[in-house]
Length: 100
Ligand code: FES
Image (cartoon, rainbow, N blue to C red):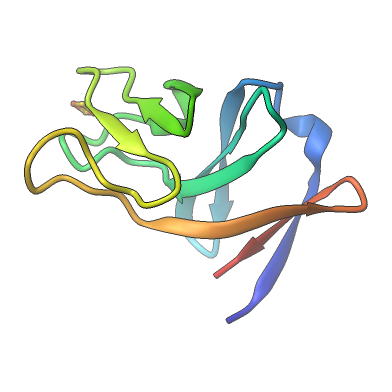
C-alpha cells in the first residue's frame, strides 16, 4: 500500500468534496463538517455522476444526478448491487494523506 500526499486540507471546503486525479483514477475526497475525511471513487456506479459534487454529510454522499446514496466508510449503496470503492484517507500536519 502506498500513501500519497494530496496537499493542503484547506483545498476542500468544509462539508464538501473535491475530485483528485491520482494515477489516472478519479478519487473524491470529502471533508465533513465534523472534520472527518472520507475518500471514494468519484464516478457513481449508476450513470457515472461525479460524487465529489454531491451532498456529503452524516457519513453518506448523495449523488448529484439521481440521488442514490453511498456510505462513505463502507461504500455500500442505497440501491441493490451498487457500491463504490473506498480508500483510507487522513489528515496529517494540515495535509491530506490518501492510501492506495
Ligand atoms: S449517476 Fe449517480 S445516481 Fe445516477
